Amino acid sequence: MPEADSNTEQKEFYLDIPAKNQAFFLKGSGALDWGIQNRLSRIFNPRSGKTVMLAIDHGYFQGPTTGLERVDVSIVPLVPYADALMLTRGILRSSIPSASRNAVVLRASGGPSILKELSNEQIAMDMEDAVRLNACAVAVQVFVGGEFETQSIHNLTRLVDMGNRYGVAVLGVTAVGKSMTRDAKYLRLAVRICAELGAHFVKTYYCPEGFGTVTASCPVPLVMAGGKKLPELDALKMAASAVQEGASGVDMGRNIFQSDAPVAMIQAVGKVVHEGMRPEHAFDLYQTLKNEMKVEAPVGR
Ligand code: R5P
Figure (cartoon, protein in one colour):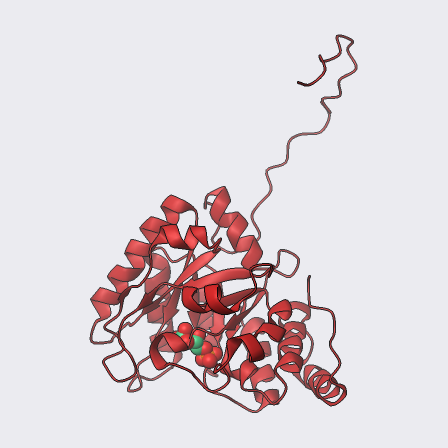
């Protein structure tokens, strides 16, 4: 039991200081409930407003992807440098130390393998399990223009309903079919549909022409997808351009874990995203770290 409060009038109510009504730092997210805002604040660094997400969920449809054959060996050393991990619950439970401090973004859609029609996905996990795993968000693939477009959008809206109920954010991932053009016109359509239907943040590809119109079309935070492996300097330039043109960070997989020096690369990406380092300078850092096998303190942690 606490001691009885003092009867003397020594309390301080700071009558001259009005209570602050602080705006939430993420675009379009001010009306979200406290729990979702708090979880988003673990994905996005409140100091920079940005995130470096490490995407390692590829196995959910294509099995042991190059660089992900042994997550425990090749990915765990990268974990301290990522703000968030995007992965399946199977890899999380089996291969990621539970003492890790990263935000977790769980892959929540799936079904077909690369041998089948990829857009034929369904919701692949219960929101209750996401909460049990202390996830900050779940991710769902949205196939705008794909064969099972409506089904994938229905997956998104059901997850948004569940996410709002439990306070877990939902990441809408725009999946661009092989036959589709990744131009600004298509990406604007796809990201806007995700946001309109309730995604709390959206992941999409960078396009060299008009990416700023894509981020402007998206009323919630947008993170840039990495895509196929590029030379390290090109990947750093792409990340820098995306952030300069309005992206709230990156969600990169192969361009990090398939790099010659993944630990160096993720640190270089972090400098570009969180500190606005020029890509050429970040590439110098990458080469220095690669050559010296030196490990720098994680960005923002
Ligand atoms: C993207 O649609 C999937 O979530 C992938 O498994 C992954 O996130 C892709 O990452 P990246 O293209 O950067 O290797």
